[in-house]
Amino acid sequence: MPDPLQALLAAGAVPTVSLPPTSRYADVGVTAHVRPPDPGEEPAPPVPYFRRRLCPSPERFALLHEYATTAGDRRDLLASGLLGDPELWWRLADANGVIDPARMTLPPGRRLRVTLAEGVPGAADA
Image (cartoon, rainbow, N blue to C red; front, side, top):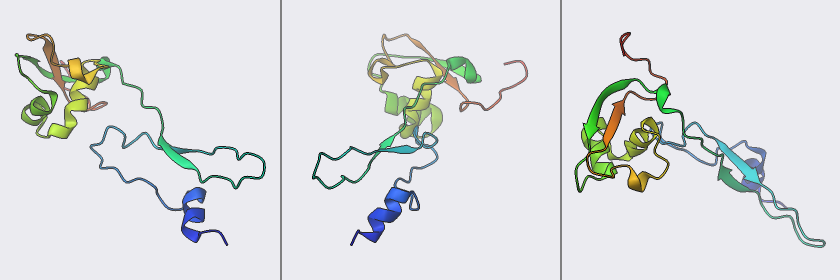
């Protein structure tokens, strides 16, 4: 007899992930990969994966101000000070077209755009 919970998960009736709205993957969604079984083998349960998240274009963000990085800056501390939440460092990366977040604060003196969230319109003159 199949496991009823696994059947519900496989059917998509029960959400398999719960992300906070501030997560960079909150709107991405989940898909499942099903590996075809070898002959005589039981089918494997589906494996959930996040769908691919494409970085938005920096032009989609309304500029608030710029910040010049200094030696020793860390992306989590910048997000905490500039956006009020250290877990929002990815918003700074997206607004600046940064693909490798480890290099977001390099070189010292780099001008980071501090923006509103993606898609939030700014002032008429912005």
